[in-house]
Image (tube, rainbow, N blue to C red):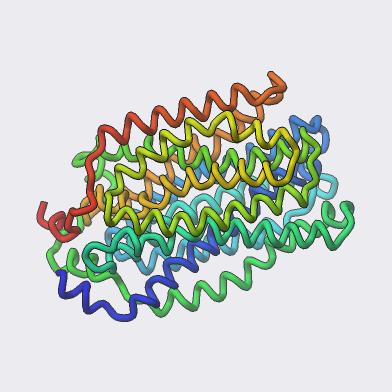
Length: 433
């Protein structure tokens, strides 16, 4: 198998295909979060108070995370039976088309209660698509990677969140600066959603040109496929699935607390200029992208588990300084708060791109990696911003939010201490296990 991997055609093409797909899909997913924090409350929940409207908008944001495990099971099932490539193309189409349609949904003033219902349905479809994307993309990268470089190769799809978030927020920054607040709230916010159509065409073309992974082809040749991969996963490795899921809640919690809750908190509560908050978020996301690449490559030398444990500890330590710095309303200090917070995220997220696939056997690897990742997102990405917003509304302070972050960091640390190191594992060993 090592020779087959070494002879894999055009690893550069594989890197680009795994990266561009996740960049597009996370761009689609994140522009919704930004729009939810900035304009959806007034547009789709106008009868609510400002705080309740934001909370309701973030609730529709959470719908996408609830759908992601379903997408992981669906795409994981066929990805483990039919191959990684087909599912990656399908997930891209589901995500891209639903994103473009979100940009077409009329406001509450135009069609009444049907507006937030349509918004939630399309957000659910976004979650279905992204539920199948991440696992397939990291498998595409890691199953092509040469020996000793799975961490490095997994970094390419892991760059998707940083680039997707930066691109989406850059567009919102430009729109916010180039049009009136009324125009932006009326139709300007829709432009990033419509722009997804262009990205969709590019990503679709690139993914059509990739080949199936050699590890999956070997599994097919060895008749390693199972009838229902997810049930086989639950029967064979339930403990690993639970620990992997719980350990990754922290990554989502850190990311969305900083990029969604802090954006809403800074603009709505502290009355910091939107341009300032978006600019600092973009800078922090770019630093996160560079750090993700570096930490992923570093995990090939020092191990995945060790870096993830460090991330859990540092995230807990940063829980209070994060908000103290934002509350100064000073752009430089806000930037430091976000950059350090997202560096903690990158320290966990970078190694996880190789860690999750290494934890599961080939015959249900797509299902295992995708479900663990997506299920963690329900709490970390979908519920955490809601909890933070509710705590802030009730207490008018961020102290409770900081303690929540610390609690999630402790949970992650405990799970990681119970998980094995996988850096030296051979993917092909698990074909016959």
